[in-house]
Image 1 (tube, rainbow, N blue to C red):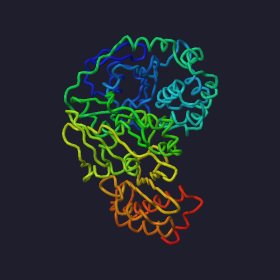
Image 2: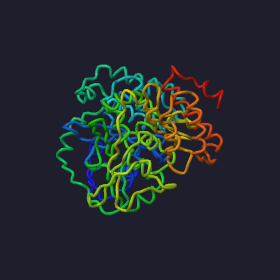
Image 3: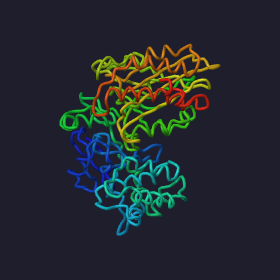
Image 4: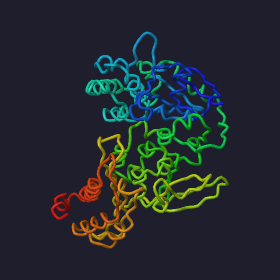
Length: 469
């Protein structure tokens, strides 16, 4: 049985755990404020909050419920727009949307209200930039967003005096209803047992699988692994970072130490997806999706990562991520095996990392071409180089030849131009909806050059390369 709290009501259901949370909320509970839009996690109309009990407090995160399995709500607090309502008055987020005329047809409005409420409940710094991040996965077809941005600004202004022990303050200041105070104890009292898992397709966050195979997953048995503790966590020891494959992009985003090692980490991750998807998507799922343009796959390839694979008997083996992919959507993973973790050496004072991406929209879109580089340099000599590029081959492409060619060379524009020529011979893009083969070759070249103009801006400009390319 799946047990959780939905708004102020305890739910116990025998529904298939692969059913989407959206469908359960709308069709089983008749909470129709949560809207059906794209069913692909893109529009945010179905945004809900999911609260997880951690050390006697609850951490709330926004998700897109259209691609989230019902079973992942087990033992948690799920909040719909109805669950944010006050008696006979608007909440702060609702009032901000109303007073700034931030709604027209109203279809997207519940998603924005829930996302802004989630921002108020979060531990993120209460500033305008973070508020916009919180609603980055919500699309509005009517307003042009200016009025919605004003509403977000109004919410931020009211949050200026929120303290760390925020629930009482948020209730008093009409962000959330009073029943939220009771949820930590009620979740603890639930003592939700582990779900009885039968054999079925492994599903973690669901953000890839439910876009591709929703009907299959809804009607058949799934094996949910999002709450498997041995697949969670980020550890740093002896200059090596190990990330459990159930960790999410938000876990990286919020990790203080990793942000120290990668100063532009949030800038890079903002290119990957919306906050709702960053809260859900697992790294393991991203890797085994095996998309040739998977952003985090390209990210980890350039870090020369190693993956640990575990089977049903807990027997483990380690392989290099660059050897994992064999052909289109084909990889070195046997029946019953899971990727347990990803590990890589952390940057030092002489190493540099960069991630670049081009897509039709600046943010929240699938890449046409993406690329990462991790390079070690001492006295203008390249001691080690790892380059990865997506969208130019049938697999996420680690550039073996170009990376090897750079190693031992002086860091000069001539070296970079020679490496680009080798890169062009190593890739094999095809023409599709994201661009022609020639266009993707151009993007591959420009992103490769951008790594050096970004990392070594005092030494190189784009003109240094373009006039000779």
